[in-house]
Image (tube, one colour):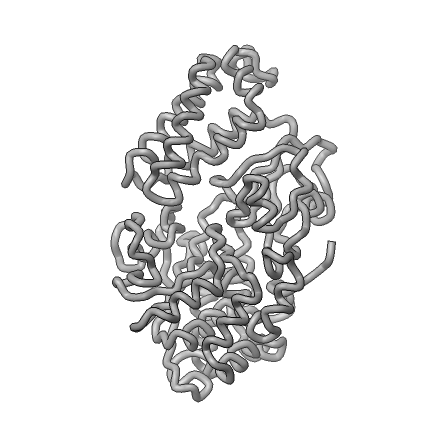
Length: 427
């Protein structure tokens, strides 16, 4: 597995909010190059890079920016730094160790779109990081890289840090926009899309922290070089959060094309305590679960899609053989039950009913009919929920039942494999 460092190249080498140290280590070269090029030429490099949105939706960034560029009017530049997906801390790494990389990426966007206002919507629990971001923004303004007449271009652009209030649903882009406006964070109907009517109903370019952080390198080095580190379908590298039953948990930058097995074995050092792997939960709580037989799938948007898997936020939760899939799923669905905003019936009621069924199963009171109901509810939620939260919340249920249906059936018969389970007299 190739050791490539694009996003993490300055981690630990500079004082995070120091513009002087950032510039001395290659910072702001992307912005300086962007102001010498035609706007569409810069966007074309981003298209060549095959940079897909790193927040989970995986929409091609170059195409998004090209579409936004064609829309007239004042545009806002907004960064989704809510990072509420359980187990995901890769955006935290960027903001706490190299925040000026994010700020530079947003500033390049502002130059292309002629934007004067930017917002970083940062998770409420990241209080120290919010303070660091504000310090980095102030230092960038003092050095002429933010504020009035940036680098003599005539661009006046400033960034404000907005604190979230702990709502998972505000990771959804339209709910995030509502929250910035001071409203209850609930998703909007689409269309219109944010690029047409986003923040304050004005055209808005909204990307994830990691997506913006890739922009300076792409502009500086060119889209083809960025693409060369990944695969034909997925350019560059990805920050992956490796957690669970592995020896070395942490955030690792790997080139696209690395397999899930290589990530676990080479970066994670393999399974902890000599345990056997049972399944992997990829992409956060709303991501797919799959067994050991699929570990050689490449981390590539195309390969994962063919396998019926989504990369999501990039978290890899490794689960060992001693974990019950039913108990695990119950914990996941309890999270979604808590975090549903309640706007639509499929998500609001569906999560509650799924938790009730899983409680029956774990208490040894479930039936085979309950498993059918569980699958049916999950499919309805996936197909009819209002926003991405409700549509993706049932994914772990559908994939765990697909790969471990026998274990669900064992619970329904009161014969689960866990000797300590309540259906065998355990507590």
